[in-house]
Length: 561
Image 1 (cartoon, rainbow, N blue to C red):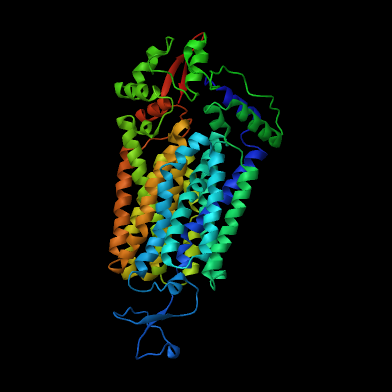
Image 2: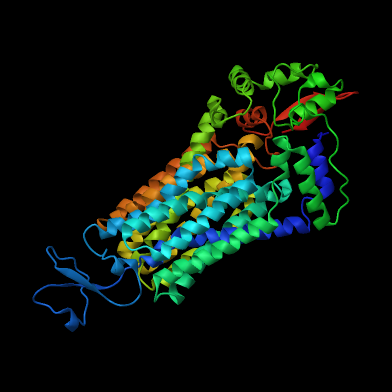
């Protein structure tokens, strides 16, 4: 019989899927819709515009046709008046212009990647809501300056700054929402909030079309949406009760839970009592209790791990020790000697190191293919706004594709998405050459499965990571993903040489990710999120379902981890 921590029992009393959770999830959905907009806004504010070289032999007033040819030594270029684009405003059609446009796309994700290195840690230190509010406020200021820039270099710099403060909306808010939802419903809800990212991309295409006469107004409208997001976070997203409890803020945790309880209409009279140390953190050391059952319960739910995985003061340790190899014991002891675990703990054993490297590369390849297909929409024949909306909306069925993760498991679903997406990328250049009309269909299939893999990872990674490093784990994986997003525009630009170069590279990375996941990925279906570093090592070491035997007052019983 599985013992629950005081926090888990209190959360069940408060309600883990009531009206308050509905509001929290709704805010998470709106945030996800927004973050899709700035992710691809450069496609529309830097849309290609017809141009013509003008020199002494040609008067720009007499131009009726545009040949779109770059000429060495051209005096200057004249652009068609519509659609409005910074390509025409900043004269980016030729020379280094195309590379600067690609850099503008990449700069946003370079800032995002830099943010991943420390924003997740800040969220684990100071709270999910605090970091989200502060960074979103700075983001609003930076975004409001975008419509007033006067050259491409200012645009690149400001997009970099915006990317830095875009991260908390993508990952930290997602973790905050996840920690307020019942674990059994987290998979579907997490996928629901992630899949609507495509609605944000479709919104970007719609606003790009409606506001095509002014790319600056497009950026202004995007900022207005961001202000709405800031307001929603401030008024409707409470701090994570799990984070407050694990970091010792017991009184604040109880206060937040009372508010949620009132909204849910439940009777919450206060936290179930448990002993705390001088820092007001829940005690997990078995020496503080005489009951071995209480000791084991605290060990598996608290933020502070026992001093050693072999130092339990009861007979169950004899049954627990064989499940840990010496490497795990050594890593656990080293980490637990420190007051606060850091990112090194995620790589503490050989198995956990291989798992994290697999997650990093899989996130990298999935994100590169995802945004590579989005940024490459201009190379597909047809209306760019319609094609962009089509590629965005095709992400919505990804929710149905990954529903199987709750039936066949996370790992098989991820493997299916990676394999089929890689096959689609292999076929795109072939269909471009022999059946051009089929290319958009193949691209849609690739985008659909890339979305499935990308969104599934946002559910998968938090389920693997321990509570004290959950945001940090997702952050560094998201940072690896941004490397893929940064190089994606340049890889697509190589398509001017041959379509086989970008899509062949996408396919190769997908196949490598598939093989890595086959050997090193772990299954998390029907397994609780690890609370401690030790539980994380147990999860990684035992890729199949792990059972730890624990004695009761009468006889032994099994506990699933």
